[in-house]
Image (cartoon, rainbow, N blue to C red; front, side, top):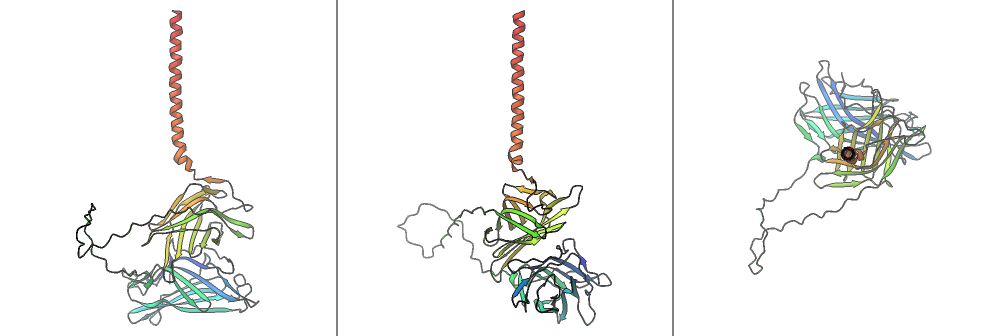
Length: 431
């Protein structure tokens, strides 16, 4: 057994407990794992995003929904390619006897997995007031339907799977078990949520020529269908600027101020302004990585900041994830894990007063207004000195300086000309 992690497939967060209005999220970031056999052939490939929420009863006979994040260090001791009687297994163990395991079985010409999620309510750091103490395991089929052998299961939409008091939201999935000779198939089985139902398109109409018409003529027996009305352009309001923060035992550990707007180009363009009055901030703070999650209703954006170790440590925004739940069966997702934006020195904040546009994918963009952010080394819950993106430098300062230099040069030439004429006139008088 040799589970391998791609460089984008590491779990990104340290173990952390987040409580927010009694409800939080257990979030696994970009699981990207290969399980290999003794011959170094891949038998299982799994790439997915997973959210898990757990509802439990407290000693006070009330209920809480708790969430925790996987640590960076994980154990894969139970992962195996299986044998003649059992299929491949991916086993992830962490913390105090918590585990997430998916075991695959072959059925006729198809394969299907079974997820076993075990959480330990005896872990007082995560479940400090749990009434029921011990290990609790839930299980559920995944994918929900068997997948044809030698095909890759793909699902970009979010699938919500509930079992007892645990809800697992799984999306951005690329999955294959029982790989033929260790090679991933180029044939996909797509989940129902990703299938776009289309209707037959009408026959193309000939180009129209618009001219004055004679209303006395008879109406054609088969008139052309009317032109669809032009879309009404509704001006988009700039989002209000909100201030957000994360806290640890020492006080504020992450500060952010921004106006946030999502611009999604799907079948119907969608523009979403985040309302600071209803937006909830959550996430985690670390020495090398911090995460800010902004959630407004059914829209969520994850900002991942990391520190680059150079001579002078500098932080930057390196990953953005967008999730918009349109309906029970339609969820929009996009991620960019190769950003290099909002760069500043650790111990400083980053500020940009001009409107910025971040491209997550070609169809998903974010417009940011009045930005100020400090994801590391916050002191006394206050922003440090800001490193400005300085739009004035880009747009105004250089032309102004060039113009001033030219004006100064012209002035010197004129002064030299005037003084030169005066000197010649004095010389003529003496002569």
